[in-house]
Image 1 (cartoon, rainbow, N blue to C red):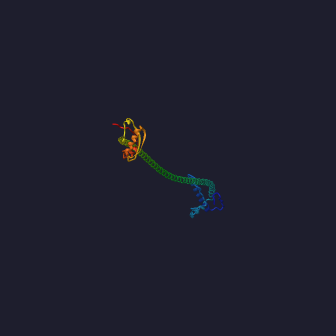
Image 2: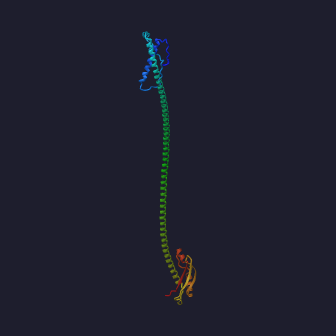
Image 3: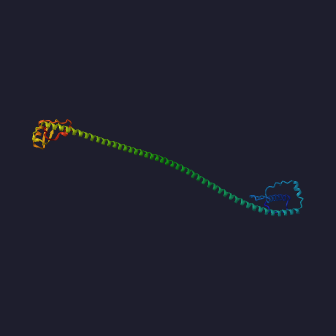
Length: 307
């Protein structure tokens, strides 16, 4: 039975009045609790038909209540009805406030859900960003490792290239020094050879000159011997005094006279000279081939000698 919807039959009994009174007491207690509450609680369902805790009244109280004057009961009933109407208004206000509180709570819950959704989305975004950042960090670390490895390879290649370049330069320098050394050795050797050749040439010239002098000396000596031989075999007379004859004599290596030719001069002297050469038959010559070669054909000028 909802408060404010009572119907009162003419045959109202005391137990019913007591029951109503107890319900009103409960309502007053609820109202008092609501009135002194500092804030509106969450939605609260107020049920007026809850089982009464004090329905089990003693039989003595029920008997005493039957003696109450009906007029006073009527007044009490009207007062209760007036209070019930006020209570209904208060309960309606309570229900409105409770509904508003419920709606507010639902809004708060909705905002909380939205906030939680936003926070969850933010956490997910942060997680995604953190994952992406971690991925980028890992990629950056990997790229750095790759770059470091590439730089290491490049530095190693550059070091090897530099070492190879220095090696080539050292080898080129060594070869250049070797070339210069060989050139210098060749130059010095050529110089020594040239000096030696010059020395040898000088020596040859000196020897040749000495030999020439020797040959000429020998030729002169043998020429003098031949002239002396011719003078010994020359038959002269006083008409030949102061006259001469130039002849060309060819001899063999043994000194044997091969021929005597007159080149010019006095005929008598020339004839006497030819006769003297043939008379000798063999003229003195050197056994030295080089000297003999100079004397193989000899031109002589013969002048008869007189004592």
